[in-house]
Structure formats: structure tokens, C-alpha cells
Length: 397
Ligand SMILES: *Cc1c(COP(=O)(O)O)cnc(C)c1O
Image (cartoon, rainbow, N blue to C red):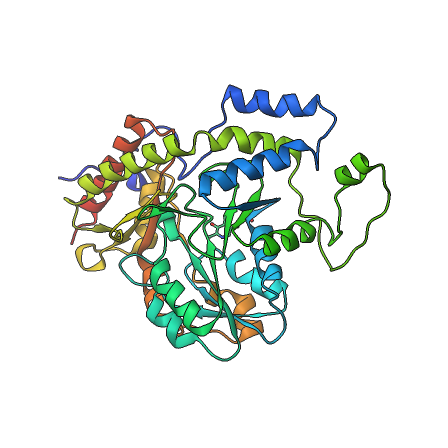
């Protein structure tokens, strides 16, 4: 007899909820932030450059531009590429809405493409088919923390003379062969939201080796103005000019100090998540009701998310029931993502509808993100495995 599920009145695997993701903040992080609070510069100060330099070094690129969210990073990237009315930008539908929204912010049109079903990464064959005379750029997403197929995407981009952008919000510290994420596309964007690989509360970064793009994005984050407050302070000058429409997308010095401190832990955190993923892979190989996503050869996957697909032929209920049952066992599951082209905004404004991206739409029906963060204990990951085993056994077909 399988154990009674918590959703049916049984005892839950855990007493308290294990979230699907969470940040870790150390004493050193807190000290770094309070030091800034006692200093002269709370924003546009020295910590910004220091964080940018450390981040660029980490990614093996010339330039990093700090902004106040991953969304702002994508917006700045679209600005730097001069995306505007009439321009098409290819985006995967299996992503967070912000990837496509950034194209719309600039007046461009996002063109949604499908995913490879095994990895849920953007499918280069679909990208090739979606290219038109109006295509100006491709944004790839390193879904779940696995770098997309940048070799294939870069050759498409070169052939058609368009830009390649990496939405690398999931993949800081990942690699394609020896090449670090952040150096795999013309522009790469990162998010420092608390569930992401490192945090500054809110925050983001763009990396590039294109110095001209970097300059444009530094102005863009500062109202489109040619100098920053601190430059003028140092030059004892009031004069500035606004040469393009920009925004206030600046990251504060408190956040940059936190970022510098957090960045030091990224390699160790990534190794911890990779170890948890290995443990999950081994345990789930013996559970017929679920199937982990495939990892491409020669990449370092950093497992921002651990996504499984449920196998409908082996279970007598659907994803919704599995989701609820795991939640009742106090396992915080999530779903990444609702395909962006199915959101009401895109249906209304861009006429997208079901059937446009069949692989991603099918995946959306059976994906689940299981708890995955660096500070999970052995007991936490044991609980996840036990709960998955329990729920799949109870609903086995
Ligand atoms: C989190 C995320 C974003 C947006 O980042 P914010 O910092 O929340 O603005 C964009 N794209 C992807 C793939 C993300 O995961």
C-alpha cells in the first residue's frame, strides 16, 4: 500500500515548506552593505565600477554595465542594438515575459519561436525559419541554467548579419566548453533577483566586448546623459547634455557592494547546485512518472532551476494534481514558464495564439520546477526525493 498523501489527509513529508529557490546572505555581505551606508556615496559611487570590473573579469569579457534589474538589462541591450519600430527580434516563448517585453519597450516586434523538447532551449532550426528581412536580433535564453546552443545561433546570426543576445539570467557561472556564459553572445544579460544565482535584492548586468555598445548602455541607464553625477563632482562642473532618451536604471552602491560580495560565492554555490542535481538525476532515474530535462554535451549547466517533465503515460493524474500533491507534502514546486505568446497581452497586441509553438505549449502542460538552491541541506533534497517518490507511487498508472 502506498503511503497516504498529505493532500488526502496523510502526514506530509516535511513539517515546513521548502521553497523552490531562495537567496543566501552572509555576515560578510551585510558588512559590505553597511560599510557603504557609512560612506559618502550611496549611488553613482566607486562600488559601481568595482562591481562591473569584478563581473566582467568573472565572465571573461571587456565590459559589464550594472543596472537595477534583469529587465532593465534586456531593455538596455535592445536600446544598444537600436531596436525600434518595424524591427523583429526572435525570442523563445519558453521564458519569463521580460525577455519579450524588452523588445516591445523599444517599439519592436517579438517573434516567438519554439523549444527543443528535451532541453527546452531555443531550437536553432526554428530560429532559422523565423528570420525575415525585418529581423534585427536573436535573444536566446539559458533556460534553467544551461547555455543555449550558441555555436549554431552565432552562425545563423552571422549569416544574416544580425545581433545575438543571451538572456543569461539563469546561467551565471555556466560554460559552453571553456567559454564562460557572459562571453557567448554580442550582449549578455543577468538578473540579481533573490531567486537567481546571486542577488543584490533587485539588480542586473549586461556584459559585452563591444566598447561602443557599453558606452551607449551606460548613458541609457542614466537618462541618456553624457556624464554621471560623480564625474561632474570630480571635475567641479555642472555641465551635461542629454543626447538620447534614457531612464534611471542605476544600481546603488549598497547593491553593488552586495553584488561584489555575493559574486565571490557563485562558483561554490554553482557546485552545490550541480551536486544536488546529480543526486536528483540518480534518484529520479528510478521513477517512471517523471523525466529530468536533457543536458547538452560539453556545457556546464548551473541549475538555477531543476525542471522535470511528468510522463503522462505513467501517471493517472496531470501536472496540476502532481503540483498540488507535492505542495501538500510541503515541497515548494513551481512552473517555468507559461509560454509568453499565450499571455493575454501578446494575444491582444500581437495576435499570437495556441499552435504557434507546439513543443513549448506541450511542455507547459507537464513541467515542474523542484526546489533547488545552494543552501539546501541533505535532508531537504532527501525530502524532495521522498515526496516525488511518494506522489508518483500514489498516482502510478
Ligand atoms: C528573472 C528573469 C528576467 C528578469 O529579471 P528581473 O531582475 O526580475 O527584472 C528576465 N529573463 C529571465 C529568463 C529571467 O529569469
